[in-house]
Each structure stands twice: as C-alpha cells, then as structure tokens.
Length: 314
Image 1: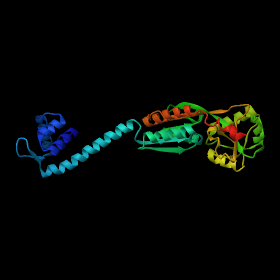
Image 2: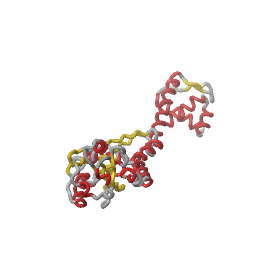
Image 3: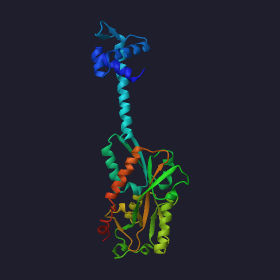
Image 4: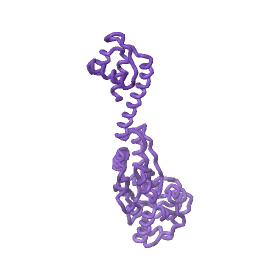
C-alpha cells in the first residue's frame, strides 16, 4: 500500500464518482479504477459499492477506512512540512553553549532575537558554561555549537572543528569610587598591588594564563587573585561591592554603571579571540544559520562598548 493509493481512495470517496475523481487527480478513469481495485484486493474488503458504471457509494468498511486514510495522509503531509522546515533551520531545537562574556555580547543577543523572529517554532537552548566544559558537550552532540576563547581548550584530535570569529578588547573594571578612576592615563602597571577577581584556572585556563602573561609582560607584576569566580556577572557584582578589580570583555562596559568604572589601558590594548566550535560529524543547518547571523550582527555592532567607555571612565 502506498500513499498514492490512499490519495486515490479518499478523492473517490469524497466525489463518489470515478470520472470526477480521476479528473481532479489528473489521471485517467481506468487508471483510478485499477488502483482502487488493487487496494481492495490488498485489504481483502470492498471499499465501494458500485451501483452502476459511474455512481459509487462507500461501504460501511469504506467509511471506517476513509477516516483512517485521511489521518495517515494528514500525518504524512505534516511530516513532510516539518522535514522541509527543519532543512531550512525553521523547526526543532538549537542548543548553544557559550562562555558568559559571549552571552553578554550585543551581537549574540541580536542574533538570538533575529533567529526567534525568523523561526518562531524553533526552540533555542542557551547554556552558560566554562571553556573547559564546552568541547566535550559539543563532541557528544549535547550542544550544536559553542563559543569559547582559546584553541588550548580544544582536544588534539579531529572530532571538533573551529572558526575564529573576532577578537574582544579587554577593559579593567573597578569600584566607581576607586582612586585609579581619577587618573588621566591608565597604564597596565596601575593595577599592581590591587586585589583581583579572576576566573579559575581549572575552568578557564587559557584566559587565566593569558592575563598572567599580559600583566607580567606589560605591567611588570603578577596579579594576585583574592577571589576566583567563573561567571563574569558574579565577578562584576563583587567589583560593585568593592571587593576588588577585574578585567572583562568590552561588551560588559556599562554593567552596574553606577557602581563600577571601566577603563581601557593607555599603554596596551589586550584582546582575546572568540572561537565557534562544532562537532565534525554534526552539520546542523540551524547552527549554520545562527552562526551566519551572529557574524553579520558583529560586523554591524563592532566594538559595542567603545562609545560609552569614555563617559563611564570620566
């Protein structure tokens, strides 16, 4: 039994006339009659009562079969529509993993918004995680795509592929009343002796190592971490409470603006890369679309904090 047999049957059942049904289906009447007869033979029942050459009626068995056949055809059409929609990224679920600084990036939020507008039936899951935990989730297909900072966080095999998206400029964050906010220039060495709030090395090793090298090379000191917090928003809350200073991606500039002052360094411009990673055997069309939108939004919203930092710093 094929779907075309069910389509022929339901059309004939609605018209109760083989010739009209054949015309609607754009087949010959003898061809339609043969298909209906083949269906009846396969089922071992009579679906139609043929009172004359043209006029037909459904048998009681035919009435029961009609209801079920229509359900099958509706389900088949729904499945086809879902498959087409999924093929264009419009249906199903997209699981995205990201470090918190990516989630806070305006381009990321704008990309999520556009995906929601384009594909209202698409469910998007956003997982806030550390760099160290993302690769394995991507490899296991728990996540369709993830965003992290360094290649050193990736395994040395071919199970994952990556793409460098852009570099995020870093800025110092300190309590609004901190004496350093009154300085006209802000060299890296200004932070020597300060209490730092930094990401733990065990969860964000690449970022921690980069900061250690940056402060040693450009400022001549090693930052002392009084607190280790993997979530940047939590770190900024602690800065706002006067517990120390930290360094964040410029997309955070303006967060807790009344309690925190942000400054770019006057003698260095530290940047950290943002990478998108995918499983080599998971080529989700939906993830492709999201990544394209994200890159387009980033180009339009490049350096989102650069205009506001002078106002916050002064």
